[in-house]
Length: 458
Image 1 (cartoon, rainbow, N blue to C red):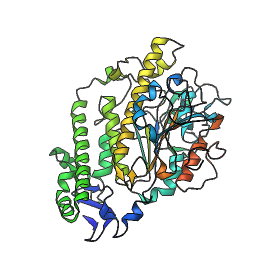
Image 2: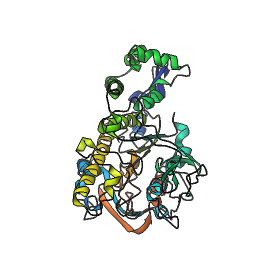
Image 3: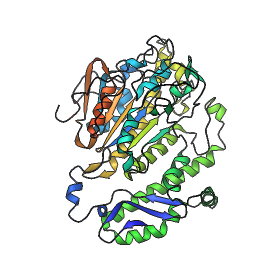
Image 4: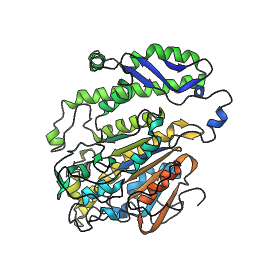
């Protein structure tokens, strides 16, 4: 164990064992005597999370009919209604750069690539891709040095990074939303085991592949290796911190066990029948909800332990044609979105849309259950959920489905439906979020300024 004395506990304290380093959640002991008051007055860091869904949504089942507070939740958003006081539904935002602008077909590639960049991609299926830096990476450049990982890029469906995926656009455009530079995307990690090992199995500079293999061969938890350190720490903590630490370590062990169970089950799954063309490495659950919730739980732990403050997650790659048998939909998602007003197809898309929101609602509720300063992790976060397409049938890029959850460390006024004038750039929201994290920027993509009506003062 490093970083502790009998008076205070360093925020960077790690429980160490062979090839393992387990970060800790925020504990009362991490603030000096007389420092608790400052912790309770907004000193918790603000986090930024983006969750992307492909292929648009059925907008009439998403968009509330009234603005302001007290609006009725439409069917697709119903899973979030219990947390309505911490959710803002935003209507009217547009990605003009997602439109053809003379480049012809390729709306899916443009939808994903412009979502966080606000830049029109160069149409190419070759290596000469060109786009722009995404908002998450601007934030990572500013605050990433304060955490172990500047950012984490995650996903729930794998995809190629080269070749033609959409009408002459490179697969890199369809399968990434995070871009480190104009030519360098950040491919998402989709394997919970690999993410878990990054967070807990490689924290020690002495970590080797051999030690990881030995631990897994003997079916031992990472916590078994840091048990001695954990016991020493428990002896130094007060009753409240002991409870917090026990709950946190139990969560880590639970997630590790679920990953192991998923790995054992993966060998018995017929991938060709489940999702034609989908490559699933070991550790990825066959059940979509289990996969999503494992990744969301790991995201919560990453934020809770301040391993990162910037996260992105693709709920599926753009243009995804996976089936959602979990809700009785055996047809491919992308194919269904070209419904041509077929009511049976539309009904199936609604099921998929709501199913995605249900998984996201699990994440939001989990964030709101973790104490952080005087509030919760959700209170000290800005979490965007949305798509680069509105109507998937017509491939529209205006009045996009966008949610903003969390209070941004007290800087956001939530619990409302806010409607903006047509053609307001979505990037204006991102510039506002950057400023809420005390980052000054000359703009992002096609932004024209900040959004009003989001803060407590506007």
